[in-house]
Image (cartoon, one colour):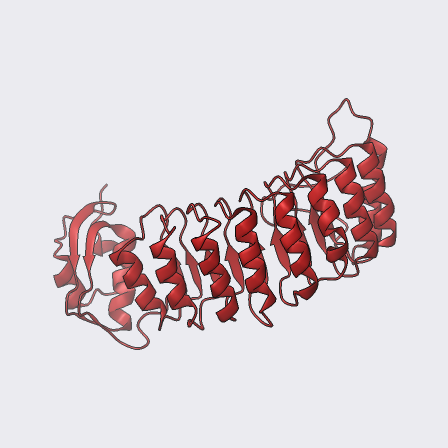
Length: 350
């Protein structure tokens, strides 16, 4: 049986919202309405709560908030998702203007065609924003030139942003250099930097190697799905030993045994690394043995993410040793198979 929208609301809908929606009792939950006109309306907290319930029940093609009067405590928006929508020209300008005074703490702009002028407009506002803590910009074709330069500028000026996600773009090696230059300036700010699938190679690791010893804030770095290779691991091996990183993602980074040996040397010396993701790499017996020996020395690692070996490979005993090394240094109550926080894949090496 179809239900009227307003019959589903627990809150009494104030007259301004009813008049603006212009619905009768026959409009049903899940239906569509062409326009929600709130132009010039005064919206207090009660009105906004009712409006929220209406928006959950109906689809609107257009919402007009021109000259709407919002009371100080009527809106407490903390997260905004604008995904698979082109944020260019006027939308980019409007969003940037709002961010100058917004109390928004989390902003997701996935696949929003931000490359170029829209990103510049956004960054110009965020340089002075003191509320936003998470910025997610995946799949925006961000390039290694102007876009990376703007993002490096953002890192120089903004100290309140804690998470910056740039996965599935084209930052590449030159763009990573710009980001590293920005990170060097930070005494407070970005703690999580996600750069999966960004066309970064071993050449980019040269820039990262110069920056790592100078970083005091960055704690989580994800470089998965980039062609870093064994050469890249050799480049960052020593700088990793003395930096602020607690979690390092290297899944699907074209690492083989040689690279695993370099990472094992880093693990043996590190006193603070807590998690290392090496899934989807071609690690054989030699690399696993090196990791095993390193874990007997390391006292900080809480999670090592590895793939299950193919049935035809005789590496089962090594996985058992790695698992027991992990258990022996885990704090009480944590000696269960680890789980990746991002992908949720279990790494029980039994």
